[in-house]
Amino acid sequence: MPLVTLNDVLPQGREKGYAVGAYDFMSITMMLGIMDAAEETKTPIILQFPDVPAMAELDVLAPAMLAAAKKSSVPVVVHLDHGKSFDVVKKCVAAGFSSVMIDASTEPYEENARLTKAVVDYCKPLGIPVEGELGHVGQGSEYDLGGYQYTDPDQAVDFVKATGISALAVAIGNAHGEYKGDPVINYEILKAIVDRVSIPLVLHGGSGISDADFNKIIKHGVSKINIFTELALEARARLSKIRPEGLSVFSVEAAIREGFKSRTISKIKLFGTESI
Ligand SMILES: [Zn+2]
Image 1 (cartoon, rainbow, N blue to C red):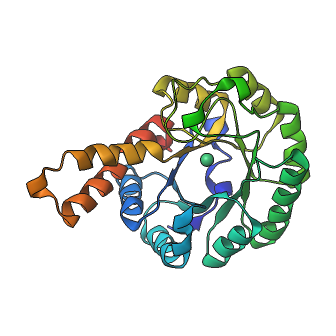
Image 2: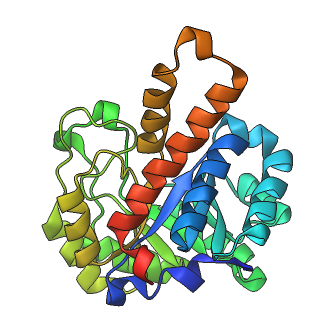
């Protein structure tokens, strides 16, 4: 299958009632586990590389992502997750990514809109869709709804119009990493955003959200869901079962690949892309 973009797989999600899973990785083994899951379930997938220290290996990992997409029998989006600067976006575009996210959500609104629009202006002529974030999806380890920065539905309308983004990451009670306590999704805010914004919505911090909440979130119209922590925890659970006498680089690699694969499959089944 050819490499595809967010615009190829997301826009039908809201109407058809599915969300495409977007899975982060930081090593080739993790990536292979995610690709195994996509192949086994024959479902489109978003393979995403986050702007973290592993980005230093972009020149090695990007060709691996593109090769995996090319070899795959399913549509694959090669996406930058949480690009923090214009510079990193340019690097990923030059490396052949088919979609990018620019995250300036910690900046004041005007600066977030300015930088996001600049990235859209750069990417649009190249046919590369851009995901932006409004409100701020913080860390689950600091989860506290008291100071939570929800996406403002009215501001979201302005943001989408001002920037020309193709997908909007929303903050509706979701957070990255492991949640301190249980996540509480604010469906009133989600509904208000869905009613006003027609482009695909993205939920970050999907790990730890219950299956019932996911069903409801997708029914409300979220079309892309980001997952990493759950895959990492599943891999860790498998690593912890390796007995000292069985410990080797081979058993470690296999546990990571299997962990990423199995948890990705369970998410694909939950998110409804298996039937499309
Ligand atoms: Zn995120």
